[in-house]
Image (cartoon, rainbow, N blue to C red):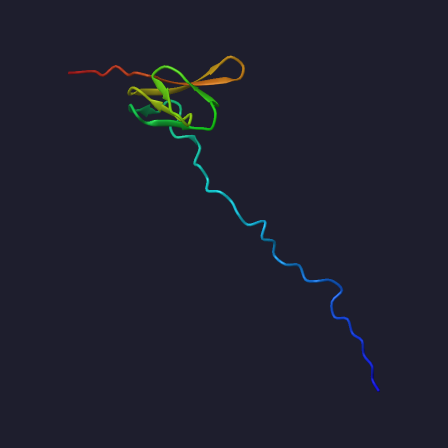
Length: 97
């Protein structure tokens, strides 16, 4: 008689975890207009969570802390103090012939 007792696996094979494999969609935060760029009233300047950049001259702030231009002009990011940045829109004089 041939009596074989074989053990094929020392461990169970690992199964895929169901607790992983999810991620949220990116929110596309950050600067939408650069320093020195011409912006029109209503243009979104900076999308953010919290006030990383503060509103300055001719810049409004939305309910989700988005900064937007309230007048046409040149956008400037200005450093205020040691750790604060402010976005301002400086109107440009239009020459008429």
